[in-house]
Length: 113
Length: 110
Image (cartoon, rainbow over all chains, first blue to last red; front, side, top):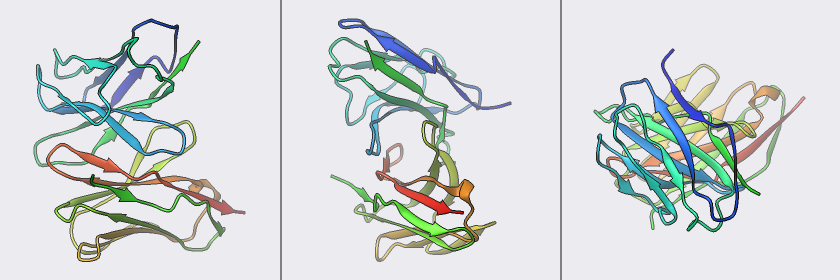
């Protein structure tokens, strides 16, 4: 079954701690994205990556970091510099070669202890 | 700032009625438009995509696009309680940039 997996489903962060959210896809998609969703708000773009070893900041990149060492994987680290990290985090991907539909993983809910 | 606007709702319709969801966008150069359904606590799932002016039908769903008015809509015929969810409008603005509206909450009353 092709798709996008995210783990964990729930993540708890302590004050001053960095945490990493996993995103893996087996769709052979080139482009991958991280969004943050807060209650009553639309999806806001954190980072995106068009190809391996390349990524760009989105609208709200401060306090976050990413890597793209493999085509299948695009992990997101929420650093201690992100002062309000409680949100629903969504990973998405697109084929990136003229096929534009964006598909989403199941999401990770991050909560602060 | 490029924007996508949706009425937050809730939009309440009786079971079996037609639900009409609307979306306007500010980037006149946008070429691709998407409707996603999102159940509470879940991730968005694609309902429809539309790229050309006019109507596109898929089962009970019809997407309508009017680029001159910068307006895209989603009609849901024979609405069912299982259609109760938040519907997100998304617009592709640039090669890799997607802009999402805040969503319209739909409630289908049995």
